Image (cartoon, rainbow over all chains, first blue to last red; front, side, top):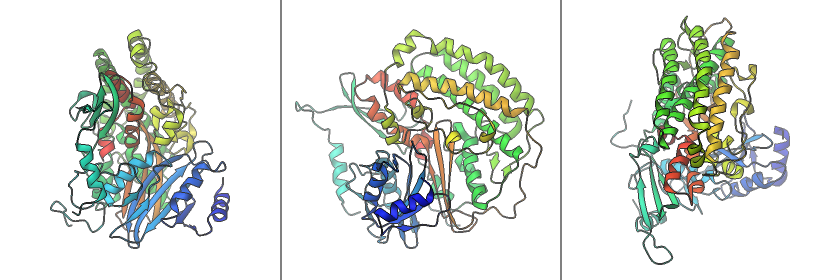
Length: 151
Length: 383
């Protein structure tokens, strides 16, 4: 599907989803409570068939934490980028997509480890790189510990 | 820290779970210093006799926080950290960052740079597969392969040393072009190597590919279906052994790949043996790509004259194919000389976690073969 077709596909099914400005991939910005159904639709609809989540990560921005999903279809070859903004920075939460793509289970563990974003309904949400008793979430912009060098 | 739902789950995991008969489960640790994990990785393996019931990988032993460090470094500086992720695909990692930054600045490097980058990337791929082949034979108990593989890999490292000044982690490909022009001997050296290795590659087949013991150890072991490969995001030769067409060089060609002809090697069987075959065939393809390029390197400048290397405000993504699969570089820039956030989608991270699924029910000796066939490089998982 081309960018225009994807845009109309999403706006028909999810009128509340906003279009993003990314030049490379068609970008859609969904509310945290909507992202799961949007992902599920993208995967299961026979027109999109987005069966391969190739990147999922988070960003610490001024307006909150962004969780960013990059999806593609192994058969049809089109890519999209989804984004959800978690405004509450003290207790960020979003529904997991690990029941849509298995790979998300491990990306989400990494995001939880480094950003402290909780994924609701995640089957095994533990730290993946750092020790279990590590204090804080290193990739947050306000993170400080004894080893951080200020330049 | 406050006690969360997650901490309670952690405690549950530390207590050995009971089997159906009420016996505690038999759990052994493989690693972090086990030779077959090729680095510091630990598998928590639950066994029933000699069979694997389930397995849980524990990573993070060499987590260096490359993404966090990169937020305080300029683009040419952070390039040097990418070598240290998948150190066997150092050139390709450099290329990924370079391409991402160049695309963000909307500049085009000369064809000369593109050709040289692609030749180096394919040499890297061969060197990486050679080392994998050596170590894979050794995992299965065949020591000779290690000498054969390293003998041939040495020739590639000599070519790298001559042109880039270092053998393993070169940091030679940089945003805007290359650090320096190639050495005058480069083309001759590469052509000699291709000629030499075309003769030596059939030896690999004699030693392992046609070996009956090797067939017994690998055929039908660790079968991964295409659906699993896509679902878990297993890319590279491991994914292609299951029929997942995931070669970024074909899907989204970059550098000089649009100018060359090559085949994407795929099999549908998805067992350890076919993951092995993909890599052997890929070495032949890489040799052919190098042959197509090496005589036709055009003239041109090797470094663009850029006032400042910084990505404009926005978000950029670049996918490349390393020796182990899809590497993605995701740069979020606020317009400064340093990225606001840089994320690496590394191939080994996704490839690792399918292991539990495909090793279930196999013997523990087969687990070594299966994890060897996934070709994991641990610093690439941990970053």
